[in-house]
Image (cartoon, rainbow, N blue to C red; front, side, top):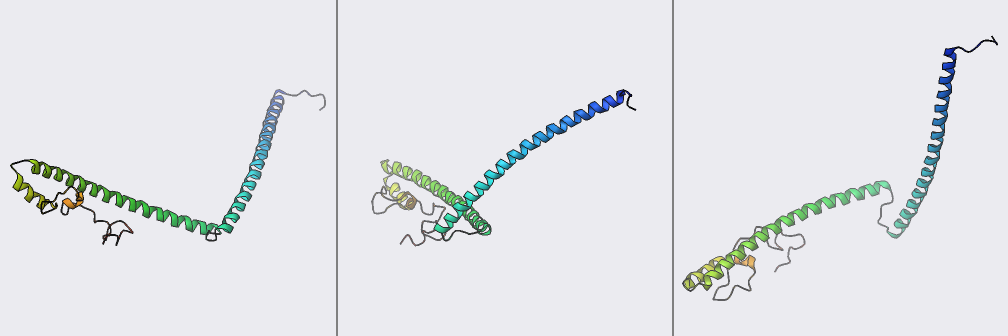
Amino acid sequence: SPGRRPTESSKLTEATLKQELQEVQAQVTRDTFTIKAERVKQKQLKKDINEAKKKFKAMVRHDKTAPTNVAGLQKQLAFCEDAEARLKAQVADLQSDLAGQTRALEKAQAQTEVQEKQDRAPAGRGRAAAGNAAVGGASGGASSAGAKPSALVAGAATAPPMGVAGGPPGAAGAQA
């Protein structure tokens, strides 16, 4: 009836509904701003995509071997990744070979030092000459100073010489 006063529960319900309405309006406002921001991002992405397409077309015009689609790019990427893995393995092998050759060089240098000390000692002249020949040094009284340290130790190198099967790629046939 028209003269009825609102009860406590109806006042509470009305206040709750007003609060919920304000929360919904605030959410609508936040969503509106979010939509506007997303539209700006979407517009920028479209510009970026168009720019990338233009660059790609220009690249394809200049490089006829370039892939013309995503599948081609993926295939090229897989090929490059495989080549990178092979190169890394090859580098590791070469580093291992280098480490072995370095150890052999250090061993040869140490043996050369020992031999030179023996050669300088007055009592060990005859023994030094025989030792020099056994180590693989120059014979006939010639000095071993010009010889390669790796040539001083017979079989000391753990890696095959350059140009021999198993040596670095492309080096085969480099030595005569």
